[in-house]
Length: 412
Ligand SMILES: Cc1cc2nc3c(=O)[nH]c(=O)nc-3n(C[C@H](O)[C@H](O)[C@H](O)COP(=O)(O)OP(=O)(O)OC[C@H]3O[C@@H](n4cnc5c(N)ncnc54)[C@H](O)[C@@H]3O)c2cc1C
Image (cartoon, rainbow, N blue to C red; front, side):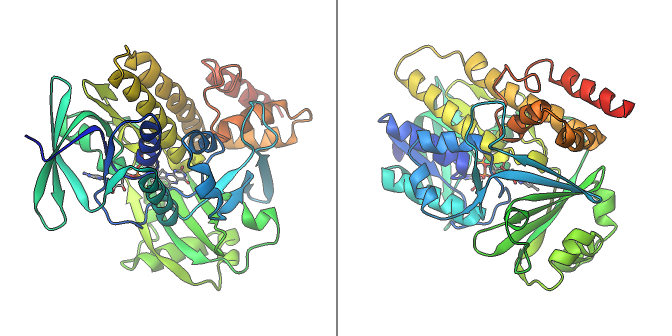
């Protein structure tokens, strides 16, 4: 006999878990989130996409987020040498939200977790799922508290939203290499007192340093900014120092835009690094469980898609779980796995082309395109609208569409 019984057990209180919890709670199910850490806790992933606003709105989490006055993100700016390319989310092909936020995730995730708690979801922090057994669709999970004591939860369904913890892929042997070359990221938070006035200073900037090394600058509404270097580990490690802050500052000194903007700024969050963050799973669902967010797949930070995939999959997983618990037949392969694969594979195409260098050329070329049609279509991808199959840069012919533009550029 388990110590607790719930309809749905959610592993992890990141955005995937809290959006899933809010959706299942709305539908009247008894939901519990078990979260390993104490919140607020740091996590990377600070620039959102307009698409995720739909998810927060649908599950009733939008208003509490609006009240936090996070930095509004209306577009994306790319810098390469002396060239600038802006994508403005109000100029899109697909119907879409035209803005989103840039958020310090420790605060953002804490707000979401508090709000789902207020809605009635049971959230247990510093409780780690250490084992899961599923029999006839009913799961029994072993949970370890911070003091080392353990207890068991029985659930009719599990949503694994454990992010980099990857609880079910690990326990059930579902981890899969996805073949992407190893990349690394080094990042930290700084005061940003010399930020330029207006959108140049408030909106996210991507600095293209080399074809395979880029930098994010993500300004927050509290006056700080996140700065991160991503790409070829050999390059990043060539600036190595045993002190992580010195390592990051040496990298920053090598990039004039970043060096100038942050020359006299103070460290607000110790530098950190992460590598081998690209992950995948052999399957995302099975009897009595579904895997969402980063626990199922993460490709690359370059287009800020992680949180949006986390909320898209968390919401979808929760809705399908509720239908299954109501006795409906659910086609998990089509309605969950295929759906998520469409979105992930679209971004995968863009990530691959980005590191090839072709996409960067296309971005700057589309900026000068007289009728802006291509730019609007690409902008919709950057806003996370990767399920609008009428967009030629999203559908099955997206690679061909990108290659055609690439060929035109080479003729110039
Ligand atoms: C360098 C880098 C930069 C990035 N930048 C961006 C960006 O700008 N924008 C963006 O959208 N995304 C970005 N991402 C991706 C982003 O970090 C993730 O996609 C996002 O946090 C996934 O959300 P999630 O809810 O799936 O998981 P998480 O946010 O990781 O939450 C999972 C939670 O599960 C908990 N957990 C883990 N194991 C257990 C366990 N055994 N028991 C209980 N709880 C457990 C964890 O403590 C954690 O709180 C970036 C990623 C990297 C590597």
